[in-house]
Amino acid sequence: MVAGAALLVAALGVPLALGRVGPNPWYGFRTPRTLTDPEVWWVANRMTGWALVASGVVAAVLSAVVGLAWPSAEGAPVASIVAMCASLALGVLYSFGRVSAYVGDLDAGRIPGANARSLPTEPVDGSSASSPQKRGRDAAS
View (tube, one colour):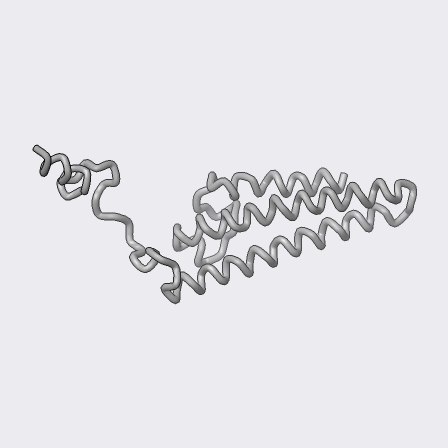
């Protein structure tokens, strides 16, 4: 049962890791910074999602190993729960550390291309007259 709970945590991390969860107040790495800055939201939730997947899988494996090693021991369920909680806590702490480092680098301008934090003013589909593709076609004709 503990391994199932750990796998549920891992499964909840998959949409975050794959970038399928946009900014919202209910699910994801929610801090004032992630909720107000979409760039930070996407990066923080991808990092957190992978940390949840990894720690959930590790917790499930540890729980299964404890259950198999001591199938009749009275302390096995407690040991499984402790292993799961420790693994998940390490995953969360790792995630907070990575996100904090990212935000620090972002604020200090150490992330290339992140200092221009506004969205592009031109469409990215090449429909603008000043886009390189359109200029190239116009120059060739």
